Structures are given as C-alpha cells and as structure tokens.
Amino acid sequence: MSYIEDLFSLKGKTAAIFGGCGVLGGEMAIALAGSGAKVAFFDRNKEGGRKCKEKIERAGGEATIIYADVMKKETVENACDEIRSMWGRIDILVNAAGINSATPFLEIDNDEWEEIMAVNLKGVFVACQVFGKAMIEDGNGGTIINISSVSSEIPLSKVFTYSITKSGVNNLTKYLAREWAEYGIRVNAIMPGFFPANQNRKILTEERRKSIFNHTPMNRFGEPCELAGAVVWLASDKASSFVTGAIIPVDGGFTAMTI
Ligand SMILES: NC(=O)c1ccc[n+]([C@@H]2O[C@H](COP(=O)([O-])OP(=O)(O)OC[C@H]3O[C@@H](n4cnc5c(N)ncnc54)[C@H](O)[C@@H]3O)[C@@H](O)[C@H]2O)c1
Image (cartoon, rainbow, N blue to C red; front, side, top):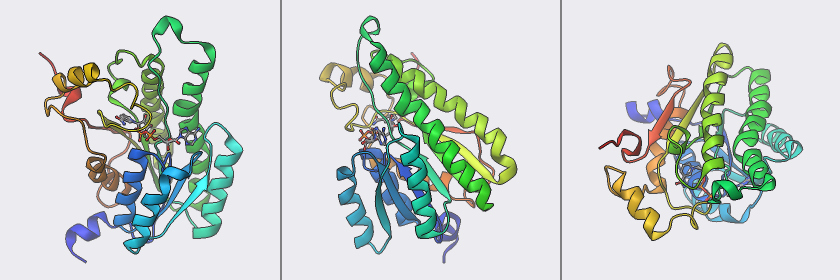
C-alpha cells in the first residue's frame, strides 16, 4: 500500500450516511466506499440511493440501503442496531439528511418551522445521540461528520429556518467534539457552498444563480464529487487524527468573499 493509500484507507471501517440517498449524501457514500469502507445508506426515501449502491458494488465495495427517518428516533435506533449486527461495528457517521424552503419570513408557519427544525437540527441531534452511544459502548472510537452549510455563518436570504438549523449544527458539532474526545470520537462538520441538489432545486432560480456566482470567487456551483476529499479526510483516523470540532468550508470561496 502506498503512503497516500495508507493515510486515507478506510478498509475494515463501516459508515452510516443519513440522507445517503440524496445528491450529496450519495456522492459522499461513493467516496467513503472508494477508500474501502462498507457503506450504509440511511434515508426515508430509498429510491435515490439505488444507483450509488450499484456503482459501489460494481467497483467491488459493499453497501446497503436501510429505511430510517431522522424524525422518528426508533427508526434511527433500528438502523443503528441493524448495521452493528450485520457488520459488527460502526466507525463513521455522516449526517446529510436535510430539507429546505424559501418561504418569506412573515409567512413561515408553525408546521414548516417545526419540520425543518426536526429534520435538519433535531435529526442530527438524534443520530449523534444514538450512534455516539453505540460508538462509546463499542469502545473503538469513531468519527462523526455533520453536513452544515455556508448559511450557518451568514444568514442567507430566503432560507431563514434552514440557516438557523445549520448554525445549531455547528454548535452541536463543537459541543460533541469537546464531550467525546475522551472516547476517541472526533466530531467535525463540512460546510458546503452551493451544489444543485433535490432540496434546493426550486430555490435556485436564474436570478439566484447569478447572485450566488457573483458572491463565489470561483464563479460556479460545486460538483458533488468535490466533497469527496473533505469527507474521506475527516473520516480517516490517520489523515485527520488531530482534527475535531472543525467546520470545513467547501464553497469555492463563498465565505471568504468581500468587496
Ligand atoms: N446542495 C447544497 O447546495 C447544499 C449546501 C449546503 C448544505 N447542504 C446540505 O447537504 C445535505 C444533503 O443535501 P442535498 O443537497 O444532497 O439534498 P438532497 O435533497 O439531494 O438530499 C437530502 C436527502 O435527505 C433525505 N431526507 C430528508 N428528510 C429526511 C428524514 N426525515 N429522514 C431521513 N432522510 C431524510 C432525503 O430523502 C434526501 O435523500 C443536507 O443536509 C443539506 O442541507 C446542501
């Protein structure tokens, strides 16, 4: 094995990805499997993950798709139990389930507020609680990667509730990094810029695309495969052994932009 392969190898590791059947979750699953991890796609909509699962299997990897809804804690617990009994361990958790809405501030009703909070913030809390408990019980350490957003630092126009949830994800990430370092569990977040996907398709109008590009030094959207390096790096206990509580932007320079 070359130096680089050894540094980033995830051979013998298992990964659970909530929202794994979505655009970014699927691409991150392919990246983790490409480095040798067995990958479980956890989602409430299993359909979107089939092509990624097939791609992983064609390349000789191992993957499974398991129903889980982060709004229902018992399904998260069942999914965690299933992986541990199937593969004997859980090493990597990626929280990439997410929803969004562009409702104007004064029109956001209680149901919409609660649903976005329940998926994007409480869902991350629940998954961290269930999987963190399992990692602590198993005593093998672990790595948790939460998917935040550039809107967590600077509230974006139109997506108020979403931005609040992602600020909460950053805070939760740093809190757990401090709490769980003693168990060898590292907790980090990736802060993506703009990647066309299912949850934001309606929001990315031509007018919004122009203003995003004007505010992105690289003047384009990201490609989902451009998250691969960050996710594999944070998943690898060798490559990112001293990294915890970090929020890593992958955003074409969006958060560095000023006049
Ligand atoms: N696409 C972007 O530009 C962008 C930017 C920043 C952050 N993000 C974040 O990346 C993550 C992935 O989003 P995406 O852009 O790939 O969108 P996507 O819509 O393609 O994927 C989201 C996935 O989450 C799943 N999901 C939704 N609610 C769920 C629930 N209750 N339980 C389980 N699964 C659920 C969906 O079924 C879907 O497969 C999200 O957290 C999103 O907020 C995306």
